[in-house]
Image (tube, rainbow, N blue to C red):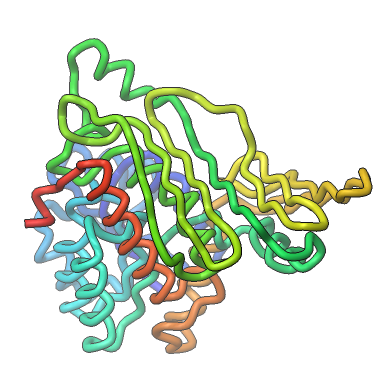
Amino acid sequence: MRLGIIGTNFITDKLLEAAAHLEEVQPAAVYSRTQEKADEFAGKHGISLTYTDLEAFAASDEIDAVYIASPNALHYSQAVLCMRNGKHVLCEKPLASNYREAAEMFRIAEEEGVVLLEAIKSLFMPGFEEIRENLHKIGKVRRYVGNYCKFSSRYEAYRNGEVLNAFKRELSNGALMDFGVYGIYPMVTLFGTPSSTRATGVLLETGVDGEGTALFQYDDMEGVVSFSKIHNSYAPSEIQGEEGSIVIPDISTPEGMTIRYRDGSVEELPGTLSKPSMYGELKAFTNMVQEGNLSESSAAAPEHSLETARLMEEVRKQIGVVFPADA
């Protein structure tokens, strides 16, 4: 599978680190708005083709599939262009700015007969499968806690008067979009659709959220998701059941977990990574393309991506974050 790349940041470096472990994946081309960045990134990773014309990139006969790691607001238009040109798309989380865009992306993928997969790495890691396989051990689940609060290096620049992409409303960014998705998506995958949502948060001057908390009500349990880019939290995430709790130190990279039972006993769920963190999602995407399986994934299924997009849009609405893409 000849892979084209949109986006030349550290996340793409990590994906290509994973690609080195997959013989069937050949990084073939890179797109950047400037030739200088395209050449620099291509040289670093041994990629032969570079593009500064997105339409020419999407139409290239040298590319079978595309990985998109551009700013959130560009995911929709870039993915649609690539899919309309017959390319399979692995698109970084969050898949789109809102539910409407996400739904249209999946509709076009089906229409064009191509794979569209949301790249949320945590759900494709061994640790998440361990959570699913061991969930029954803690009895009836009563609360899910997804906590991801991390002081962003870009917020330091923000405090000094420089607004970088991470805090730009026009790019569909903010704490919920970048970090909150790590808490909401696993909840949806494990427990389905909540009956109601309540959310609060802190808005920054640019109109994006710096931090927030969302409460999701289910018939017999609740989900609590906390997210922030303006402060740290050292508390783990947890799935709390009547017989015990699964403790997850880092919801974005599930490993080193434990089950703590009511009787005081502890069971280790190491979820150890033997390959780079983005290997699982790239392997799943490659399998889907090679097998012609256009919509089925054991982790990031289309219905999960869509429900996550719907919930995130509702959380934004309650916090007061409105993107230009919502118009």
